[in-house]
Image (cartoon, rainbow, N blue to C red; front, side):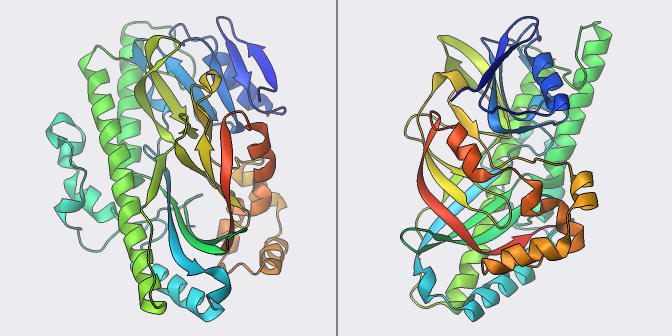
Length: 389
């Protein structure tokens, strides 16, 4: 539930957390001072400082869209699939064989596909309506089915109560989404400067009635679907790894959610553009995914449709320390020891120390803060994890 309310110069900001870093609070106040912000700002319990707007923020606007309020990894999100396998029946050797298949077939980090994938994998949307993206087909086809780096991951998990084996993937629209985000943020900066708009750092905007605003919405939506296409291809590869190493394995339909996008929605009787940057939609009855950090639990949740959060919830645990601080202060052997004690198969190296569990907030505390936004329905513990560092 709401832990704190702070005021900007125009609107309140409602915070579903009790402690926030100073730089993040400054960004929250800036959002609550925007002339086109609607009703209030909603800050999720995993919030931390981002570029222009906190990651874990929800902003509804009237008349404008803000590229940096969506973020650079457009469409980044989660996919999860339940299998008919039981974790207690899955051997360590089987898991290791599946992980080996993943590393062999899915490019990680900055790696791309050596050859372009089939065009049929691209979203079934009008690419001609995307003036920037329509010339990026080859780049998109070489990035589909690739994990990326940072906090992106592929995990094999188990239901802590029913022992069911699950597959979970976190990834986005890759470098293509980044280039779209940067291009339109630059257009927003040029436009705001040309018209002497009173903007705040990192929050240049595009009027939604201008063609450039419409173009961004088209291209952002395409990238959101591209990110899902990316996750689907990877999920199929992971499933193939299971089929190659397990007998009589079946898979339930895929659960998919995005947590970096903007969309037209109706809230408090008004049609507005809701920006979710590191936040997940949580309409009443909607099934969502809230992952933990590497080595901690994740949750399948059901949305409660709380209007106060613009029907949103957190997108994960959220960082409690920056990447640079994590590198300076965390100990690789200690982080590996903790995961080893849980029996988690992983390949964490020093280069991935910024993604260690200790760099993130306590996922169970994050879930507890948002008990009026979502209801956890399945608790998942990691068996094995592949990171894209």
